[in-house]
Length: 88
Image (tube, rainbow, N blue to C red; front, side, top):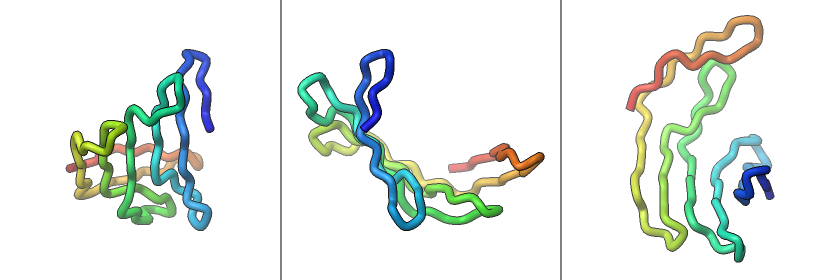
């Protein structure tokens, strides 16, 4: 449950085994889902886990778009992640 200062209310769903965020839902004032982002096909690259499939849906489940990521290149400098190239 995440409530932002701007009034937006999100539910975040975290995988208890790997700690990845697999779903996020934006809620309206009545607590109904308005927008959903689902992430899947997680792959480890340079010790970090990235979703290679991201789906965007209306709150009623209608799929708006699905992204399939082909490749992610990671450069690690001073223990900070810097994603230089994402192709899809």
